Image (cartoon, rainbow, N blue to C red; front, side, top):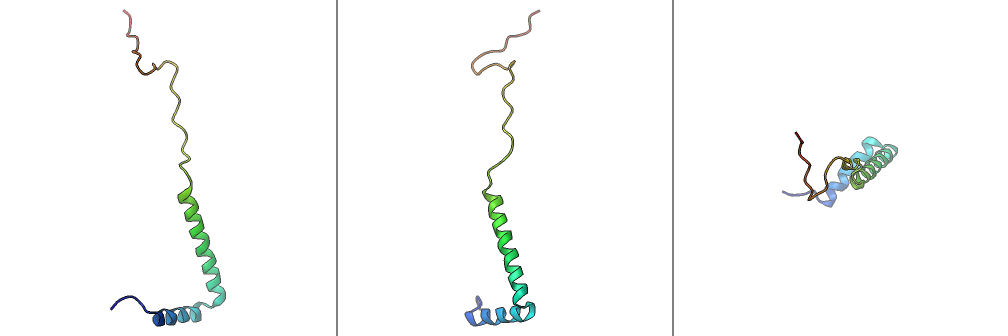
Length: 71
């Protein structure tokens, strides 16, 4: 009771070949390969989000204090 052996896999592949035919299997294999390539490309693309906005001119630099309101 375990995984399929080589004989069982060969029989399954033969049945699939008979059902779909060699040309259809080639199309399915090509589409599957393209899908895997697209997935790998999407995973490897770095984050393309925009950079955080730059500091506004009225903001103070670290270590400086903001001037308080004068009355």
